[in-house]
Image (tube, rainbow over all chains, first blue to last red; front, side, top):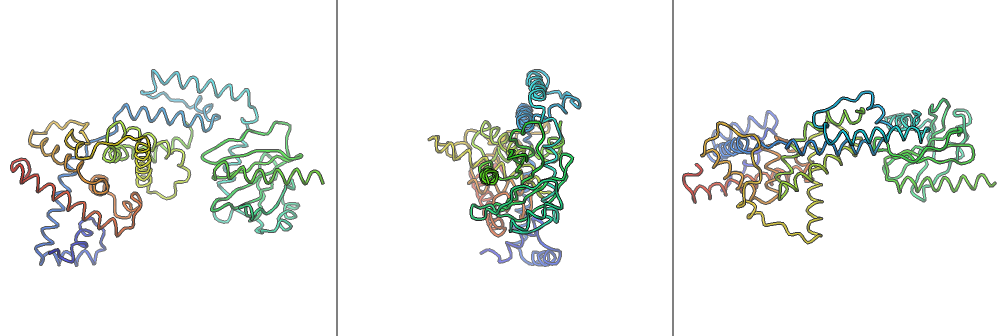
Length: 262
Length: 181
């Protein structure tokens, strides 16, 4: 027959009991031969397992393979960052040989990227992502909290340089929760905040410049969708999937086109 | 190297060996384990920004476990039937020491092989929980997070796993009286 205390004896052995209960179990196992034996068994098994099974470490070839995969992953995610690597690049032993070719290609590609896409060399993308991340901190998300577009839109008049499209798409799953002003690209950008499920989507808007609209991209795990309506440039940022983000973008674009016709 | 990558290397990569060991115990072959670990690290890198709190190891091992389960499902869909675990056990230890121990005597190696074999022959949920508790030294809360079960289940499963390993150990000792105490 098993002693009723054996679950607590195991918990005691695993260091999961508070001091009082631990003292209790220590007293109990002095009196109970079965629990004393259980403790000895547990100790014996732990010793054997730790002695005999803990040797395995990642083989160097696998580690190198993973580092290469990580590097390719960073290259895909943020081409601009390769340029920084060009200045702060430090060679690693296992990058020598085969990998130097890949790194060279990546650097060449990023230089080409610079020349071909000058709009991405500005710090706008980083600004957008950090503004989004900052907004997720407590008390930073919204300056004016309202689900009513007639409250949010006029608020921007005194607080931002632009007056973006504002609407509540609660029925389509994008609830308007408020607005905020952020400083972006040397102007006071208007930010309309939507909630989609548990995700926050920030829709930034600012006066369009002559440069083209940046391409949609992913930064630090956040998707950034860009578009232009009239003389305003928009960027929706979120950690939702692309489909969810594009759903909102589509709704806003349709509404913008409608507003422009009126 | 950018900040994000550097942060990842500082915070997550120290647990690469734990991820590898865990994958080796879960997978049927070393090749499978390699693929699982690589996929897990890439997934971790992609989802790194969502990481809240400080329990990086439990977070990474959870990803390893999910990658393993996905890989098993894919193999089953492709009609690949893994060898029964008992066969694996007879083919050789699931985990081979990569660092040779110069002190090893042949008796010690026998014991290692025996223990490896006994562990390999355990049902996956028993093997998994023993590795997390005894090798990776995780507490109940962390194990609950990695294996996605309540703490109560962790306690009862751990007790069953320990009893099962002890049972097999005793059986082995009866069969070959001089191999194990």
